[in-house]
Length: 82
Image 1 (cartoon, rainbow, N blue to C red):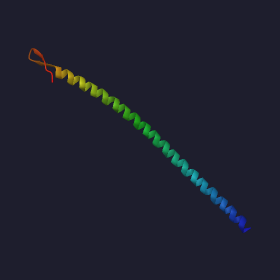
Image 2 (cartoon, rainbow, N blue to C red; image 1 turned 90 degrees about the vertical axis):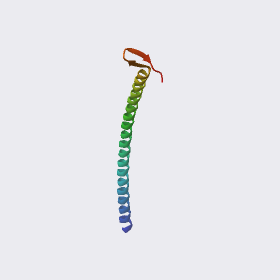
Image 3 (tube, rainbow, N blue to C red; image 1 turned 120 degrees about the horizontal axis):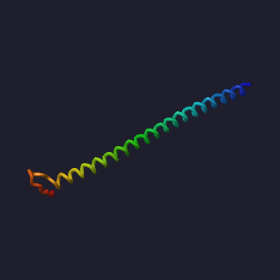
Image 4 (tube, rainbow, N blue to C red; image 1 turned 30 degrees about the vertical axis):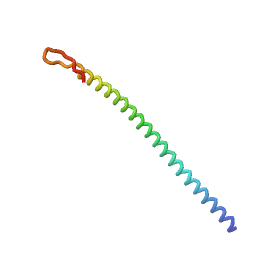
């Protein structure tokens, strides 16, 4: 009778441990999923920023080119090459 009671107690304790472990694994899995979503959102933001930076660099290069090649001095137009 004592053996049966101890076995039932061990089974209950094992089931409790398995339930606790499964709960913790679910919690970790949800955390990993949240991290993945955050990383994807950051990747999209980074790509958008890179695209904007490239456009600004192209515009700046074009503006500098126009400034460096044409300058006006009074009524006289001359080219300055650097």
